[in-house]
Image 1: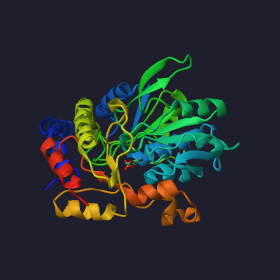
Image 2 (image 1 turned 90 degrees about the vertical axis):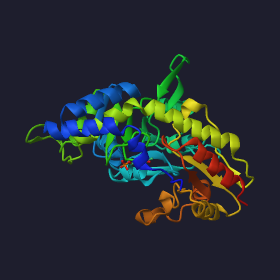
Image 3 (image 1 turned 60 degrees about the vertical axis):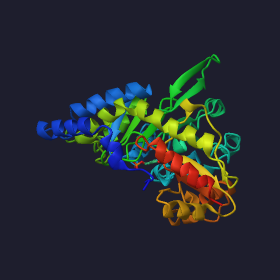
Image 4 (image 1 turned 45 degrees about the vertical axis):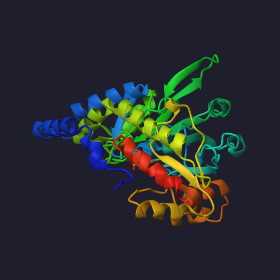
Length: 377
Ligand SMILES: *Cc1c(COP(=O)(O)O)cnc(C)c1O
């Protein structure tokens, strides 16, 4: 059996150190808002290259708090528009609608699967306040064109970095010089998820906001702690959305191995790129290695054979997953958009299949997967 992702194997890669960290917190008797959070937040902010990191309960909350903080700070108001890729996990869109903001869905490019930067300018209106990019599948979605549009129209750039911890991007600066930046530090703020299956995954839920904006960081930290800065004094109607000490301790261990674990993902992905050879299958454009954290390895399967390939691999002991089978605008929760036509997003929902990838899969297993795929017809 070659599972899509074995969390048990992923944890076992650093099992002794993780157990030691958990035991330290259990025996220490301090479970929330303590030294483990402080240490992880400092290390993760440093890793990403942002001034602040605020741990919170999960990745959805991280994104919710960014928009809510901008509303509390008077930068945005309910009814304002946020440009967002139509091809994303539902959480990105939920974080916008949860705040009474209006998502404006923009199609992806079929060869990159990321937001089509040629379509963004036409979607900007007088009430557009932000562009939210999603580094989906671990692939960098930022382009200098997006950065230029944000400057030209005075828009905030928000990154959904839930799937791309450790992805590096070459960003053109003011003076046309090129800087290497981590996704999560390019925009004004970024939401990160530490859901167990993510590149940096906890043993339960967790998330964080990174930003170099002091006022935004303070508002996010306050909102995620009941809206309180001082015990029993409430500035905002916040919620309880904190990262607990056990998860922070686990994440701090796993952060040390993130680059190494991403390097293994790259080896797996490069093997797929070099050896998959089946005319039914299209691979997305190959990015420079550092610009892809290879959270997932999406392929597009033609001739209406996606589900057949999934079943065939399953019968041969290989797990695959569709990301995602129903596009956000076709979901029952967004009935008002069900009639919208977003053909590229819908094409991806109908043709995408994600192959096994992760820090623990062996190269022998990857070779077996490729062999099976190449014999599929
Ligand atoms: C996982 C994910 C989220 C949400 O993170 P949770 O921790 O599950 O709340 C947001 N956006 C994207 C693109 C994701 O993949």
